[in-house]
View 1 (cartoon, helix red, strand yellow):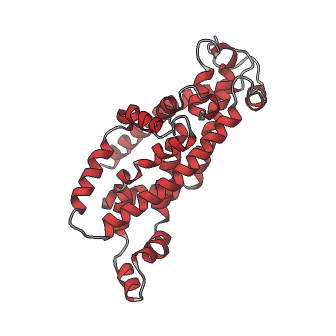
View 2 (cartoon, rainbow, N blue to C red):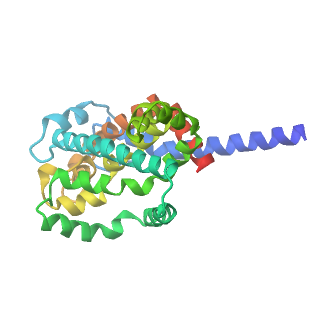
View 3 (cartoon, rainbow, N blue to C red):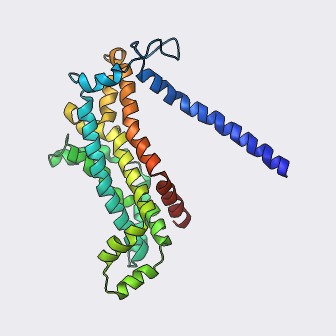
Length: 280
């Protein structure tokens, strides 16, 4: 059995190594292309003939046609605001479902769970016309409302984590005169760093990488584009030859904040997922 286990373990490591290499090839290609001096999307060799930093410099200096700094600022603003609102709403709803008992609790939980299974883009046309009717179309506020509006539907992982926190903490606080508001903010949240980080990372990534909703809501409002929509305009038929390497540089820069955020908070993120999944 020991030899068999070692053989299986070796095979699994080989398979995972091969899959990792396959997964990293596009990332490696993108990184190399961002430093490539020759123009165009297609080359005859994997390795660039000449390297340059001008593709990165061009993103921030040549803003006549593609204003990457503005797009990056728009994306950061929307992502941060959506992250804060979504995290607060998700945790508050999860705490209510975890700790409070009321008549319609199970029905609301089931409805929220079912609605959360439907992809958001199914309602994007209706959302656009609603935003247009109240004068919020083609605005960053519309994106913030869209990304944070359904936050309560993703309560289940946070609820599973809150279920693991002993209720004796709540009971002790109630005996000391604390109300639900104080218990949530002063007792539960300080003991919930993993799920806070997990919720915040997911809430930050969603608007950072979204392309569908920003395309529908912003239409042709060039100055309000986010990086996903803005970078896409770099690789249309009219611009792909001239700006493809700049597009690659922009894609690399967009991934940097997500990578740093995940690396710094990885242990909390994994703890939040495992705790929530095991109990939820």
